[in-house]
Amino acid sequence: MKPQKYANKNHKFRKMVTREWAEYEKNKLMKKKWKKLLMPEVIDTLPKKLANNFASFKFDHVDTEVNLDANIFLHGGIGKGKTVDAAYYYVDKVKQIYMKRGSLIGTTFHFINFPEFFMLMQNRALEAHDLIQKYMNCDVLVLDEFGVSNTTSFVDNSLYVLINGRSVNQKPTIFTSNFTLDKISEIYDSRLVRRIENDDNCVVIEK
Ligand SMILES: Nc1ncnc2c1ncn2[C@@H]1O[C@H](COP(=O)(O)OP(=O)(O)OP(=O)(O)O)[C@@H](O)[C@H]1O
Ligand SMILES: [Mg+2]
Image 1 (cartoon, protein in one colour):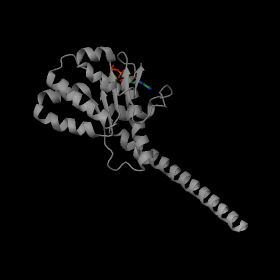
Image 2: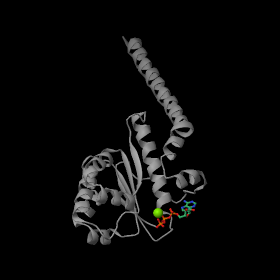
Image 3: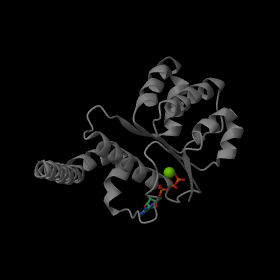
Image 4: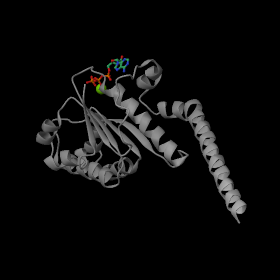
């Protein structure tokens, strides 16, 4: 009886070690695939100038502890490096999704310039619904240069639907802005800022 029990334990132990070893090997392979294949593909979806210079940027200062589902609000003056940092967090969130899901199949992510998006929504109200659906459901979204002063109630409402929808679906959004969150709540409906703050799941970074 005893040896049998011991043998079983030993077998379990061997199995555990083998499983841990397989996990380690899988992780190593995934990291390699990320670096060689997927990361360059994700970088390629950034605006051209950012994509081309990505390798030359320094990221020693970034916060590496930001949770996958947390929003990030990068605030600071002109030329402080907000857009470049947003690109880092964007790539990093997609990496976290890949390491969690084991694949990027079906994962969607967009890096958009907010003033452009704003104009598109204003001028093509009929298509705004489709745009909002597309950006509401993607896994990672960057709204670069968030906040314009001449908003309309239609855009205001659409934005609320977009940002609230992402918050409810626990999809992270990265914002960069020359405006503080206080200023944003003056420009837009103050409920919008509460959705950006995402029930205290938002990291505000001052550049
Ligand atoms: N991490 C970095 N490493 C190296 N260079 C950087 C980095 N961040 C920013 N820079 C340099 O500073 C420039 C301005 O950065 P960026 O465009 O991100 O600023 P910004 O805060 O978004 O400015 P704006 O308010 O005008 O949108 C970049 O084009 C790049 O040359
Ligand atoms: Mg910028």
